[in-house]
Length: 166
Image (cartoon, rainbow, N blue to C red; front, top):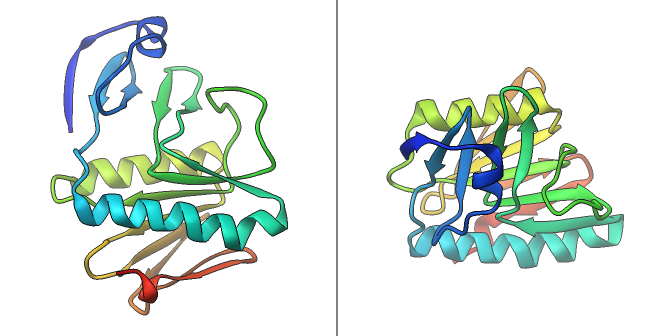
């Protein structure tokens, strides 16, 4: 991820980016550019989660801006997130039920862990981090980290098996 010179929150919220960027403590943070495995899994999750979670009253969002901290202001963009019902605001200010981060080759472990911790501190009950190639990953919830090697990810009543993802 690359950062640039400091900008105001207003400038960030009113700027278009070719690939949407996050805002962390006054700086624009560019996200890793998606590659085909990342993009395919993100699309697969949007369809699969809609089918699995929508009947329970959840909504699925792809690359949705979320304000995770008021001061210092932080805005993150999970690859996919799930909310209970539909939030009224355009930039979410309430914690989603689930945030999903799909790994890209350029992702740094430190930056990813910082983002996961930020989601959990914000009140997101579940965070999934998934490698689109191996289909392995982790489920973060509260003080718990569960390593997933069998491609079966859960968040409350939501159960997704990504072994069928190709």
